[in-house]
Length: 129
Image 1 (cartoon, rainbow, N blue to C red):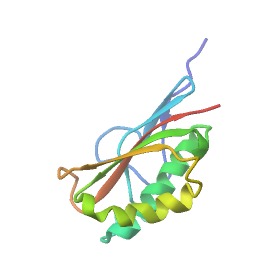
Image 2: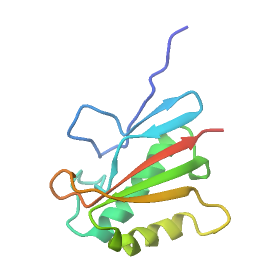
Image 3: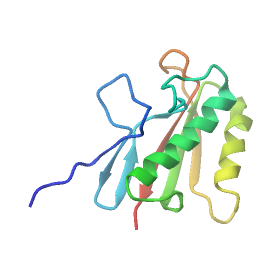
């Protein structure tokens, strides 16, 4: 039996390293760092708010490209330069997960080893039904 590819990609957005946006193993999705790049240009906006909006949109696209949807996301880890900037994360978070009784777990971590210009990245674990 031929094995199907497990790499998950998002059109217009690529890592500098030779890695996919995520991988599907069975019914599980594991992401790499999901950056807030604009898929139309491939570039990362300068402002945190735009990066957050694009990061959540790219997260959704990655999950859908793997055959799932956002309801299968069980955990989101948010890496940011300064945890005090969580308001910029909360706006797309609340838009994507408005029901307080139906949200994935979330953890924010301060991180300062981003590529140039990157201010935030997401990492997820999800299940595909």
